[in-house]
Length: 137
Image (cartoon, rainbow, N blue to C red):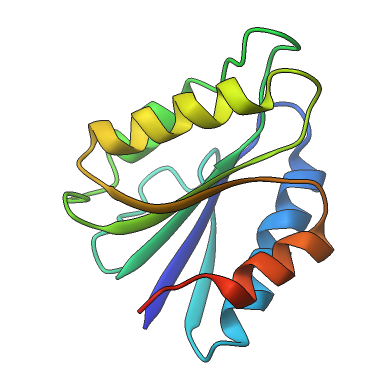
C-alpha cells in the first residue's frame, strides 16, 4: 500500500521531521511504501495517489492550540482527499497539544478525510512504535 507522511512545521522543523521519519520507519516495517512530504516546501504535491495519509504538525502558540495556517492551504490543494483513510498527529508542546490536534482533525475532516486514528507524539522512538501498530489495511 502506498502511504504519505505529511508534516507541516511551525517553528521546529527538525523535531517534526524526525518524528515523521520515525513514523515512516514504523509503517515501512509493516511492508508498506512510504513517502515523506514537507507540506511547507512541497507546495504542488497531490495526495490523491496515496491510499493512506498521515498528517502532522505542531502547535504554534503555547496556550491557544493554533496550528500553522499552511495546513489548510496544503490539504485544500492536495487533490481529491474525500474518503481517504488518515492519521493525524501533533508533537507534544506545552498545554496546547490537544487543542492543536483537534484543530488538525477538523481541518482534515473538512476535506472529507476519514480519520482512523490520532495521537500526540513525544519522540521519534514513540513514532516508530505507533507506525508499527497503525491499522492501515
